[in-house]
Amino acid sequence: MEAPAGTLVRWTNRGTDDHDVVSEDLKTIESPLLKPGMVFETTFTQPGSIAYFCSLHVGMDATMVVK
Image (cartoon, rainbow, N blue to C red; front, side):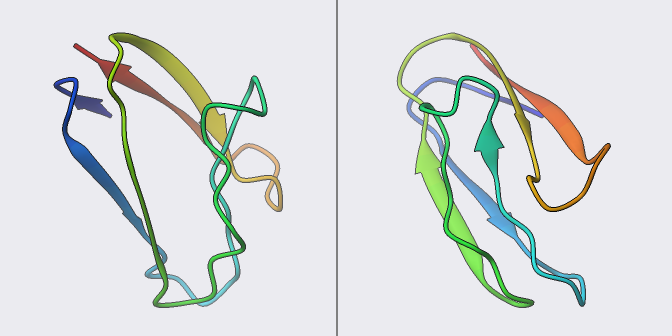
């Protein structure tokens, strides 16, 4: 995923299982538990790469690139 700095980024749980969004540093991103249909939003202000994952599902991970 890629976005310019200052952009509002939104994760929507469109599945049937619970999920969350947590950065590998455990500080930059820390969403609440997202039940199906729930949304989590955050704005990244600094350029860089942020690795993140779902703490409930092994292998569900990605990287946010902020330009």
